[in-house]
Amino acid sequence: MSDFTIKVRRYQPESGDPAYYQAFDVELDPTLSVLDGLLQARDRDDGSLAVRCSCRAAICGSCGVKVNGQSTLACKTRLEDAQAIANKMAGDSLEGNAPIVIEPMGNMSVIKDLITDMESTHWEKFRRVTPWLIPDGAPPEREYIVSQEAMVDVTQAVACIQCGACVSACLSLEADPDFIGPAALAKAYRFVGDPRDGRTTERLFDLANDPHGIYDCTHCFSCVEACPKGVAPMDQIMRLRRIAGHDHEIDDLNNGRRHELAFAKNIERYGTLDESLLLQESYAPGVKAKLKPTPAAIKGLLSSLPTAVRGIRTGKMRSLKKLIPGIHPKLPGDSQKRVRAIYAHSEAHREELNLYVLGEDE
Ligand code: SF4
Ligand code: SF4
Ligand code: FES
Image 1 (cartoon, rainbow, N blue to C red):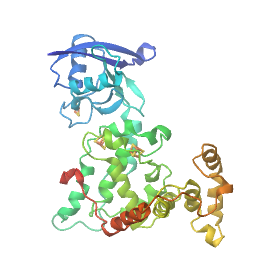
Image 2: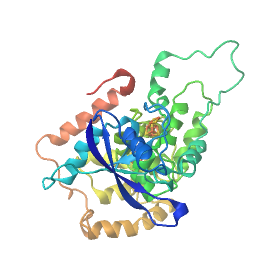
Image 3: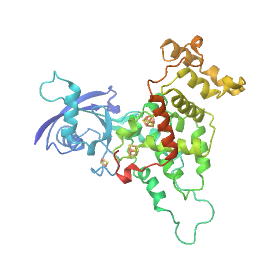
Image 4: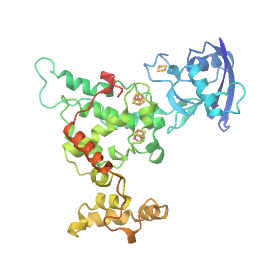
């Protein structure tokens, strides 16, 4: 048995009081979970502490919380691990143990204590992606035959337990609450990648053109780190983008595909990002050569002016005066050649490993 102090964010709407933190001392084996700590505090000290849980084995997805600021499952986080992180965060001046801080998940409104409203931020978006199979044509006489390879491809997305940890951690959702979000988009890939589904094009067209769809993800990796089941939602979103932009060539209304292409071209050419060229190439690819920007490109470029001004002010982007070819710094030595070799390799090896199933860690 060891002693731990858990510091829990409490919010009890019926009291009319603002949220506050309450510390509980728990005595448990260090290998037991943060959820065990919460349940002991509820049983011994305060029966009004609201916690959602069921399986206690990382299967049902109901105990999502933040532990020391990280979105996770309370039942999958050992007290000893949470304690080590709390101590590390407290720094060198710490004497004894720091409290383990437990808070409700982020990006969701709190119903009570650690219970969040999963309906409006998660389930509503989940339904938004039509999370069921829509086969084309008449059903086969017997079962659908699907290759093992195709099933392995979607297994990673199938592993999702709908806990909402990725939704809680998502930085894009913080900026845009209407973003469809990592969990729902991972589920969308589960059906886009399924050869039995007959609505692949419609699904992709929808998700690419939605201003809160696949191009709203900023590639920040937070959902990958938060997911307790190895679903790596960001990877599923990147797969959706690749199939939409590359395979189906969907030129979305958000300019997402052109922005990606401009980004890739920019790095292939210079090795580092040239923000001014990125902007121009995203909205009006080839405009310098043709000098014939489309009305849509002009509109897009004009709408980006405030961003460009901010970029110039902060030194992130070259000023218009310096916007002449050749001024962007080149990589030293043969580095650029090596960058191009990476491009050539990735073009020649367009294979995607399902890391979840294969257990690859390289
Ligand atoms: S990678 Fe994309 S979906 Fe995942 S947390 Fe970041 S912004 Fe959200
Ligand atoms: S993708 Fe992972 S973190 Fe997100 S809801 Fe599914 S299991 Fe939870
Ligand atoms: S209690 Fe079921 S996942 Fe934690």
